[in-house]
Image (cartoon, rainbow, N blue to C red; front, top):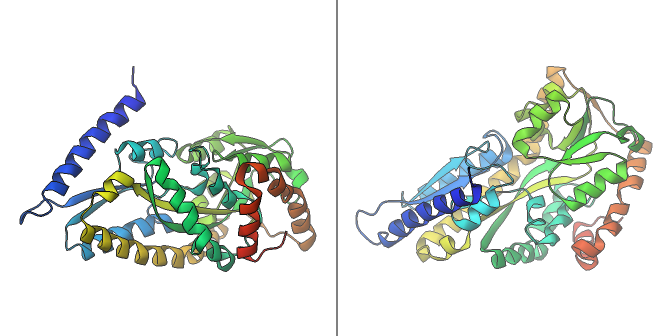
Length: 340
């Protein structure tokens, strides 16, 4: 019988031995490059996919080939339920999981990013992710054997289903796919929907076969995974944010030569600026492409409809205060400049 954890441990042992060899040889004249396997679950032509490729380009450039970054998109190595364990075990060196993934890992504070309508846009968001709150959250990962490097944007989410979603009442009884997040579960419950946790790689088929009725995603994810082909309706709700933390195995990172680590930090800073700079544009292009395809009818909320969505969803902030931390929620609201 296949034992996933045994497989991950075996892969980790091989990976660490190879990495150790590369590190030991790093001072030698003809050293093999240090290999960083960067795994992610989305398509290469998404903001995260393009950011990963930009980091590869810059990391190899700034280390003069001393580091080789292998990027594995579309869950080629691990599904989103497996990748954090693989990183902790050393089977892969770098990931960019969605921020919702850290709650199940025991760092519930990251779920503040899942709260509905907590940011008014990218400028509001970046006051948090580039500020002291963002840094303090990344620092919390160290206790889990993870080094947090940066926050990368995808964008703001829209709701989709095979029936119109204009008011909260339209969600009643719908099976809606979510990531594993208590906040997102509470969000769907507040709308009267039935939350269904499911790996990202399985969503298209689940929508196609009716296992779930709908889901939430930024337009870039919806388009690159072809979800618009199997969803008749979508609402431009922009109700929540989807972003990522770029992380690396802490032991691997700490054992890198200081000069190599410095060059990788430089590459990550520039890749972050690039990834976050294109996120809004990529989502706008994806939305335009889906509208042009004509398979999905898109609805913009009226002022009254938006007010009804906010009325239904904002109580989730209070509901999750004990789990996430009331002080942290208030701090994020203040830094983001959003009054609830």
